[in-house]
Image 1 (spheres, rainbow, N blue to C red):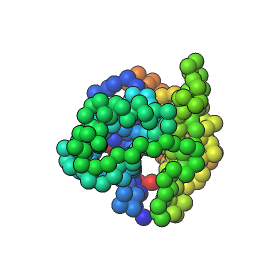
Image 2 (spheres, rainbow, N blue to C red; image 1 turned 135 degrees about the vertical axis):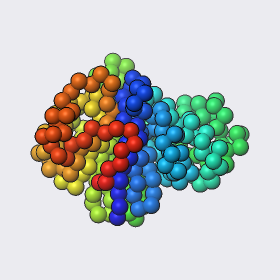
Image 3 (spheres, one colour; image 1 turned 180 degrees about the vertical axis):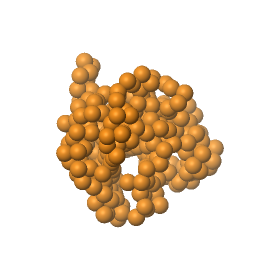
Length: 250
């Protein structure tokens, strides 16, 4: 089974000409899966010629840098006359608002001549999506743990773990505040696609060593990040700081 991930958007919340918004495209057993859909996603999907083949989208939370590219992606699917159903998993409290916004930008499947159906599905902790070759679990992130407006029912944040029939795993953090919420997801067959803006990359690498995981791919990289990326990469051959469009086998 050939498994790969392309980090098509590796930027953080502040827009950068070098890095698009958070987006990671996973290929497995002939399917393509998108984790988050930040600004710039549609261009990469068209470049890779898979706009109409995308199987499912998982949105970790509703910060703009993780979802702003969705509307242009849907518009491109309309232009390219996609036919098959598109499932989009996102935090439940945002479904009505997102549905209304999709309608507001003339992409409503019921009234705007969209050639394909869209299903918006709420995320809950546990198994979200499964087929004979892999399944995707959702787990709760602590990204809003220090947010003074935080309410777990109104502002949930999730990370995702994709597990193959061969028990290889790809763990995508979305945004997290501490390493505690990902420790139970890590094992020696795991590849971790981890944000580097709200956490300490050094601490993540230390945990990765303790858990003996296969690879750490850092994304969500802020323009002013002054961390010791080069040192971490030189000292740990399983660590990478991704750029937009890089492909990794996992």
